[in-house]
Image 1 (tube, helix red, strand yellow):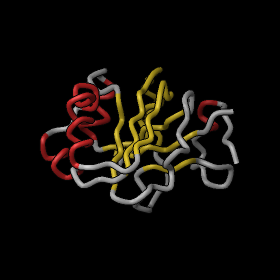
Image 2 (cartoon, rainbow, N blue to C red):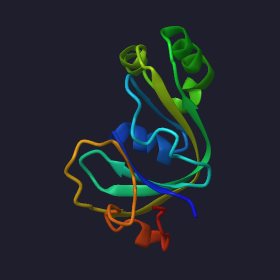
Image 3 (spheres, rainbow, N blue to C red):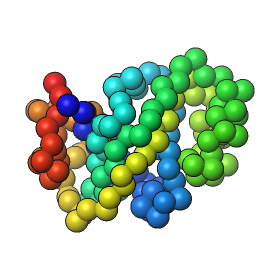
Image 4 (cartoon, helix red, strand yellow):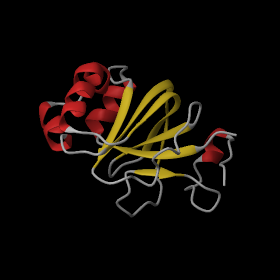
Length: 146
């Protein structure tokens, strides 16, 4: 059974995904994120607008977990992937010192009737579990691992 994830996105990035202009969701950080190496092909993503509703679902077509990043590697990732990531210059400037990264190629992107959930913390990516799922897997009739 595949994992389910809640992914928080700023409105312009979510809109770009829904319009087909953004095919890779990227996450970069200086510290190892809790979801690192827990995103797998065929996992389900619930795409939530920051400070707004869950607006779409997608599945993971492919994923790259990146470690030991350097500024040179970040520049190479930008050259290789930015056409599908759609990050402006300021995004890449803010991420140049990242040590960890996640590149998630999306497939089966589907808008859904907007769903408001009660999420009040600052996490931008949540691996859903039976205990913490915001009722989302029930929308698709799917379960969660763990």
